[in-house]
Length: 124
Image (tube, rainbow, N blue to C red; front, side, top):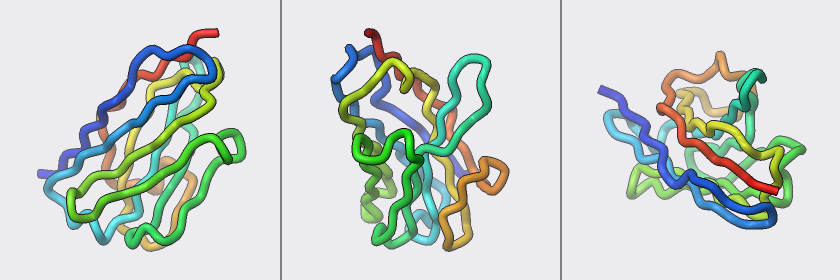
């Protein structure tokens, strides 16, 4: 049974930082592209960042480039998202996702497995 469990969300003031984690079980983690998506109220789920199975390549949405950093620890089957310089527009539920292909894709429909999400709220 595949499980992806996000943690680390919360309430933070603008310009603050948070670090999200995505702990996985039941899948060959080191073989999967991993990604973070987010969904704000009334909006569609959008790609935030992705990382290749080896961790050597990453890709970011323009809206978070230079502020967020995605990483993974294949020994711990865990992915991370370091979020710095947070702004109110970053408020959303953040989801981690896994895709068995080797390229980072930005469409949510491409991903095989999803976590339940963690709420991030940035106050102004």
